[in-house]
Length: 451
Ligand SMILES: Nc1ncnc2c1ncn2[C@@H]1O[C@H](COP(=O)(O)OP(=O)(O)OP(=O)(O)O)[C@@H](O)[C@H]1O
Image (spheres, protein in one colour):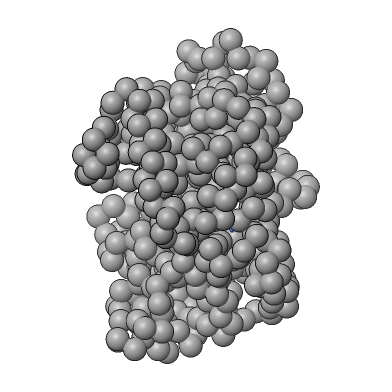
């Protein structure tokens, strides 16, 4: 029985050590249905939005971490929220057994110690899957995935929260518009969580990341033999979301043929798996999002008007962060606290000039950029007070009020670049990555500032 569970399981292995990933994949491939590996735990939220796994094998130690001991536990907590139905088995070094035991208290099913014995590891996975099945069968209430809060006290954000409360319980399709990083994904999840469908699945699909040939099989699924690699029947996202909410992200990137297929599915409320002729009825509420100017796409014949009408029964627009006034301060404080906890540091406070710099910055990457800036500042700072120099923005700094500040900004940029390049001992690739700019852009700046 247990062996069958293992054979049917989809397993995700998360470890920043490529050797571990390779050997785990080699060991597990013949034993389980699907094995996927992920080197960067930061990608977990996006990945788990798209895929569900029966079991996650999670490493406790990450090299890039400042405080190695907390990183594994942090990601375990995140997994409990992002994928509460997945069993988690921890991989740990012998020296960290105490931490692994803490991990058990935090909801992990088991842990294996490096170097592991293959038979013991497989037995442990079996056991974790069996227990998970028993838990699910006993209909015990699984913890609901916690939804990220939609913070902000600006008038627009208060109005938006009220609108969401009003529209969430209806079954109306919602189109969310807004620049990158403004919180469209957060809003989509909030709508689902406050809807009558909250106990049913929320399934996201990033249409911007799907190439044309993949689109149909991802959305509608396929039957065995539909194409060379179709070795078994597979449900698509529409079926996976049945009874719940289907979140179509980056809808503006959908090709015209893709738009036609989607429109047909929405009109007929049914899909047909690739390679099959049998239509399958699907009941989904569609929430979609885009940062593209959708009406302009319609006017220029790049987006079907009839599809927009299907999608935007309710249209919500998220304002850019630079138009939310004091919300910047509130969100900065929230992220500082969040990352201080993650990295086991005291929560730092922003010095006056640092705050002024935040309030003057345009934030082209919006809340996500603020979040990254705060994380980087918490990681890098050795003091409990963050200065203006501790803030490194991903985009090249442009402020709301250009002018006399320009020279100071150039100085700040120069200082920041020098600091990051020094930190990486002159490694341009790594420094550019941390600064969030291309290598060429970094070279240009090194030249400009004579560094
Ligand atoms: N109002 C908010 N309060 C707290 N956190 C927020 C808020 N808005 C966004 N965030 C956080 O900022 C990050 C980016 O948000 P999100 O992914 O929802 O943006 P998006 O508009 O969907 O971005 P993209 O257009 O790139 O897909 C997330 O980590 C999210 O939790």
